Length: 179
Image (cartoon, rainbow, N blue to C red; front, top):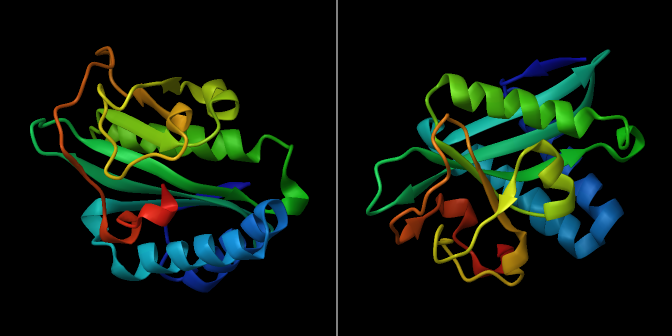
């Protein structure tokens, strides 16, 4: 398995991966929503605000992960949100997602990102170092339907301390239906 950050060349394959994976796990409506989100992230997000990491083996796309910038008006730290994350249905349960996440977080660390956040399953993402945070300590850019899924980790030696908001996300994520 190898990792790639070339998302423009593989935009269609990446979009299809997210649409099909979320359709299989959450239904057609969610698959269409997340597939459209992936396409918008690739097409509309400035490169300085977007990181995409994909996992490949023998020419097949196994998984992908998006990282997008979150900006906190009153805080200079660099923050990226990790979402969405997908592993092809036939390849789930093999540790690909955890390796993909670890690789992506290491790349963010190397470029000086301070904090990574995700809005997801605390049980799963807790295995890769994410811990629950309150919206008071780390404001979300939109109201959260499931606040227990707002989790984060420091990517530096510094402890995770509150961020001064308000928070702003990239345009593709600025939709209450995603939160």
